[in-house]
Image 1 (cartoon, helix red, strand yellow):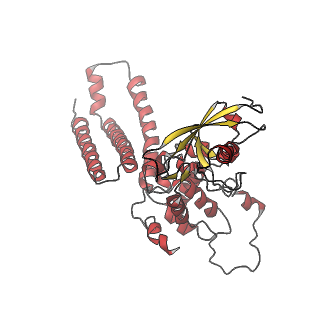
Image 2 (cartoon, helix red, strand yellow; image 1 turned 45 degrees about the horizontal axis):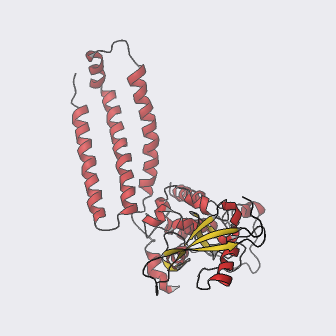
Image 3 (cartoon, one colour; image 1 turned 135 degrees about the horizontal axis):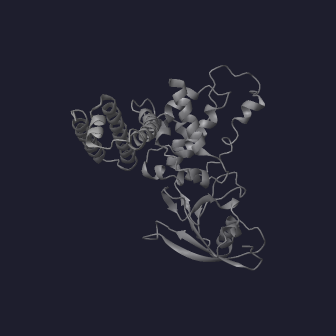
Length: 124
Length: 240
């Protein structure tokens, strides 16, 4: 079976097996579900008595809410862009793969920065 | 739809001879039901033997064991020898070669890539210890773990139905990985590390998107998706 040696080597000892992408896609999916339910719970059922600018601003200014929101953003961006990466790996086999992956890396970083400068500096 | 003797069913068959035809085309043949319970393969044989001997397809055992006659009948991959004509409830059967495989002629596909991927997972018993000098015994419970895995006849229906297999030319596909699982979960086998190493690839188990076409395509009613999930679990279990 020597003739297929090169063929088999393609599948051996690959440094990038994709198992992390696969596993973290599941982990981030479950995390998003929990975070989304938490988001709904806080937004719709907690402290509804004073629905004023002050009440909302106070929540946005709290450290806990900032951590919650940023975690949400990080998982959502990872889950979405990792999903797009999987589609790219499925369908793009030419040099365009590098371009598209790079493009979505940039998109991810831009959105992360936008989210950070929106959420973090808010003081009320 | 119960078919009686003398009923006619039209077979609309994909024809392509690369030496003669510029492009593939469909040709209609009328198959006469000569007895109840006729299989699609019986219809194809009737066409080849009585109407048009240029029609080309693979067949051998005609009972779902050799895996030669995988094809796409009315949009579903199956082996023609296990498919009753009347089960399609249609007056016209559209018969195409397996999708996603290179076509050699008519319904005959090139399986070279498919079998190369099969050999990647080393589909044979690997033993590090010296041979026992007698048969290798296994408890009925351990043997039962191979049910749903060992029955594969390599007809190619599952891999050919898989959109990930169509999209990624290097994807090992459900068939090769079901056969990897058949040896990984065999208690007599000692080669599972090298096998798992081969399927732990961006073109291996992680490329499966659980589309589940392979399950509905398999004429032996096996579950390649479940086998792939088993391999994924096994890889993660051994690492962490």
